[in-house]
Length: 89
Image (cartoon, rainbow, N blue to C red):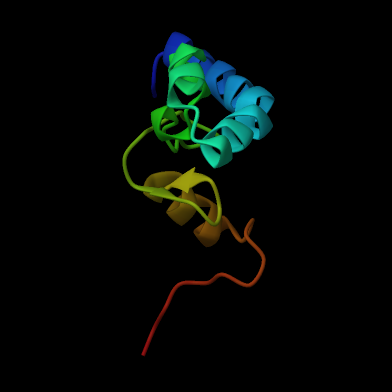
């Protein structure tokens, strides 16, 4: 379980990225890198980290589900993810 402050920080970054996305796109098209540099650092999408929506874990996260591998397996075995079942061949 990740610290609550780390999860909150990442959520805050998501909001900032969304807020400045159009402005960043416009400045990139113009080639105005000086103005782009003056924007907040957290407005860059590369500073975002994929985290599990349940635990906040940063590693082993499946983008499609937004869950880490532990929680994904748990939910799949419980039948909480439609169409997913344990493989057997």
